[in-house]
Length: 110
Image (cartoon, rainbow, N blue to C red; front, top):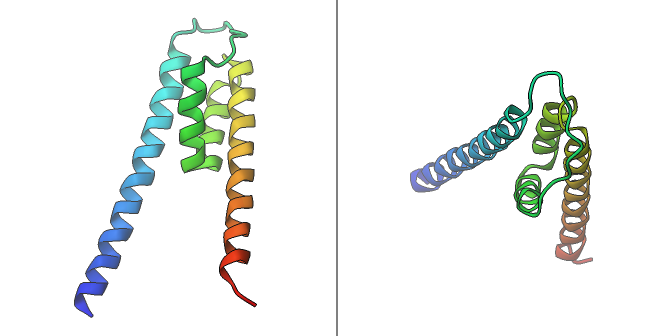
């Protein structure tokens, strides 16, 4: 019984550390891209291929938080990237919802 409780506690702590790492990577990426722009200017650049891949990965891990950080962090200086990141996060959330509902219905025999 004690082993089971310890495993659950360790599992929860590892999950919290995982989400913290996702949050930190998201914030660092947002700040790094934003800091390259001079104050008061806007860039209409699109996301590069590498940025899209990283944003997809981060949004699949936590779509709502990552999407919000990218969108609200970039919307003044990088409006095109902000909109693209927001779209990616919405698609990631939709994919997770569809997957979750599918797993729920497929795993519950009637």
